[in-house]
Image (cartoon, rainbow, N blue to C red; front, top):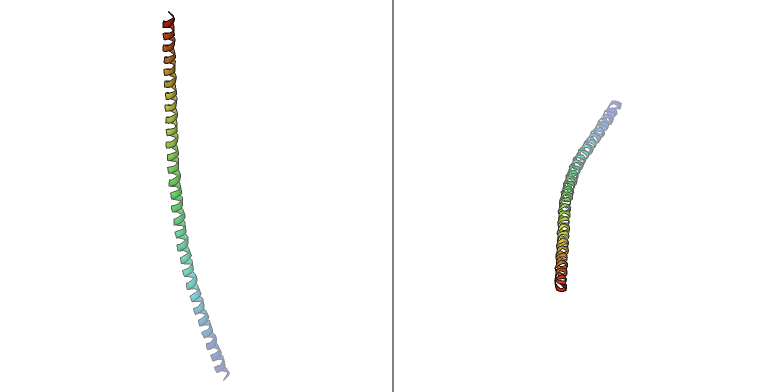
Length: 108
């Protein structure tokens, strides 16, 4: 009878251990799935960050190009303005010279 009791106790203990092993295997599977999900999400997030960085780099390069174009346009406008001022001054000097010549002619 004592042997029967030990055998039943051993079988009960073995079932509990099997159930515990099964529970642990389920937990391992769940954790493995969770890790894979986190890896995938992390990879997707990294790709999104890389794409955003590429877009920002492209925007920065575009902005630098537009700034350079604007600076060139400003320089061209300044040159045109300086040339226009020089032409106006030249015309004004020529007009004054012609007026002096006319006054001198009239006084002779």
